[in-house]
Image (cartoon, rainbow, N blue to C red; front, top):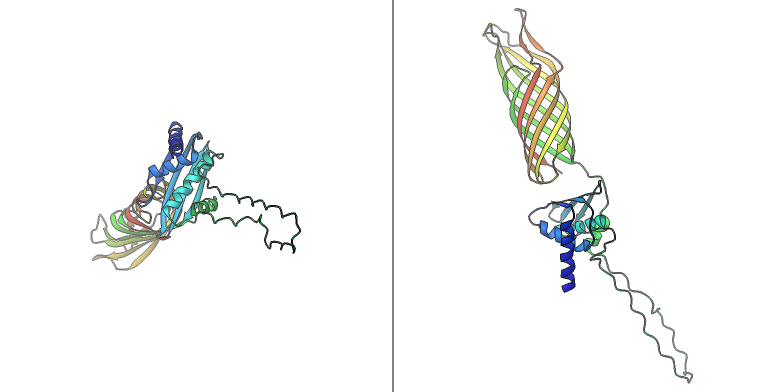
Length: 340
């Protein structure tokens, strides 16, 4: 017991003297960071690890299924492993094993040893007088070794750990906000986005609707139009920040295509409806606060530069009532839900 305690203390000192950076993120029901550090130190023992960075992120998939995402950076080489197990404690043990094997491959501390089969006892020589009948031969060989015991859950988790591609998460993000452009006025806005997220990349399809606003001619207030906008967008994003709980910053760029709908109104205008095609390239920056593994709150600011310049023409006056702005701005607040 004393030797075990000394070994553990020495391992902790060895870890503290080396530039080992550990980032640990797990639900409150899991073992804490100190337990993770002790598990790594116990398996490293006196081995001096190289300069390295370890990222441990554990998330709950279901009540009986947990996932470990382990990132390792050793001597400028980076790798990631994904392990799933039935409890968070098993994943902590598996993470400690994998870190120890990566930092000190020759360290085998804590490896459970399967006792070898005992040697069969020597059979005493028969008496000199011949027996009345020959001895019966044994039906089984005494050298048969017992079947190996099944591996522990930790060993199964370590054996199943191998680099593999992560399935993308499906995100749904409804939002509300305000927009300026292409109509030269501020308008309330609604948005809905669907995205495939495999951190740090993301592909997004989105729909935006600017609610109707009333515009009037500056020279003749009797000439008015009720204008609204509906667009669909496709974007690619890079996401800054770590997966799991915390803050992320998606940076996106893409194209938006849609239509402006205008309806004439006023004493001198025939109330007809007209449509104009509108297209733009856009770029956005956002901030997401993941309060849960599956829920986040988000703010997004998006700028759009139009590639078309539609206008609504008034007959019989013969001039344009509305010319679209060359750029647009959208500010949205959203709730992001991870569906799978």
